[in-house]
Length: 414
Image (cartoon, rainbow, N blue to C red; front, top):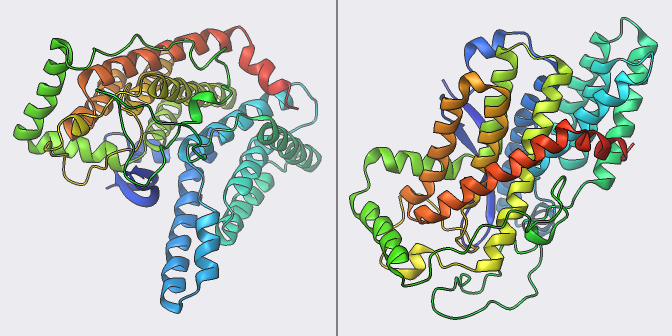
């Protein structure tokens, strides 16, 4: 049994959305599906459903427009892409966290209604598809009705959640992976170069305002091994050796992590753990918010480092190197690995809150990082630096949240 998730697949030309089977190792198990779940977890999981619905509707609309030669519809679809998973999960979880905090500080407000309303408001803003929005409205109405033993409290919660979400949307960092490129690509031995006719992707991310970091460069890793040095040569030789002897299992891992977005997979893992450990709504919202904020900030820090070092990809250093089947080459510099940066953050946050599962969490994170070496698109030092960077960001932000920084940040948005 598997579950479809919203994913982003990288290639030199563009980012595309599609439905991908989610491996059962992190998928929603039968036990997790039937166990009682908090409102925070419920809406975290509904996010999958709504974006998948919107994605399916977009594919149908695009196919119909292509068949009819409807260029206006095709232009409209191209101009209104679905949100990136890191944006969706982070904004929903932060809005939930802020809504719970606000509801607890006010009397006569339903916390469940506030969570549902905050989540629905964010998703309505991010997802333009009318059918998906109708599904969101039905789920919200169902939650408000369930919370309506005290109708006044339910309605107050709905209004509070809506207000909180709008404030979070207005004041949140703008993380645009697909922003315009106006710079100059440096040239020289060991320097990354962009695909022909295609601008670099994500260059503006490293200049973005983070949620909790003081600076995107705060945890910038040390430089990678010098191009052509013995350490660099050994790292490239490892990528070449794996490309020539790649096993079926290594190919499976490379394809699995390339096709399924890490945010969707780790949020589902977190939702399962929160349900399994019977965490409260407040605890669930806190962990989900910190998980997604830390990983988002790790990606900001990662791209700051990528465009600071401009490190060449293995397949650019050796143009005969074969990537794993169906694995795309991202159109941005190599060092450090983005998959590894997010994996390190997910690992540190979830390992902190679920220490009894730390070994398995770290195993999955390291597999996520290694998938890029198996795929032929990263050196081992890219992965090592990325994992270290993500973990450093997460540890810093765990301390920040503990001292009330995330609460202060969301409170200032109300």
